[in-house]
Length: 83
Image (cartoon, rainbow, N blue to C red; front, side, top):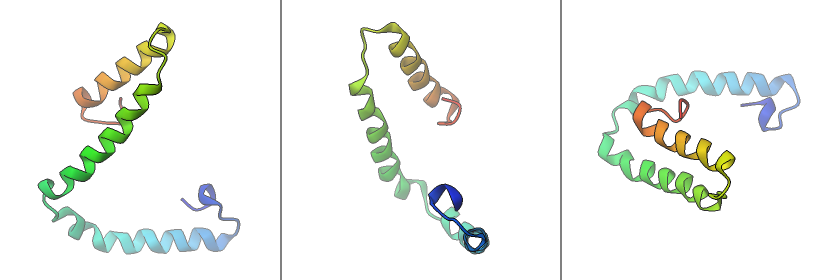
C-alpha cells in the first residue's frame, strides 16, 4: 500500500496504518450493503477482465491453455486468487 504506491518515508507507513485502523470502523457499514447493490459493479469488473482475453493468441497452445484453465478455475472455485 505505502511503499509500492511510491511512499519514501516512515510517515507513509504511519498514514497507511492509521487509514487501515479507520477502515476497521467502516467494515460493518460495508457489510450492510446488500448483494444486489454491488452486483452491477462486479459485473462491470468481470467484463473488464474478460475483455483482455480478446488479445490472446488463441493459435498458440502454450498461451491459450493457461488462459482457459484460469478462466474456468475462477467461477468453479469462487475465487479470483485461486483462478
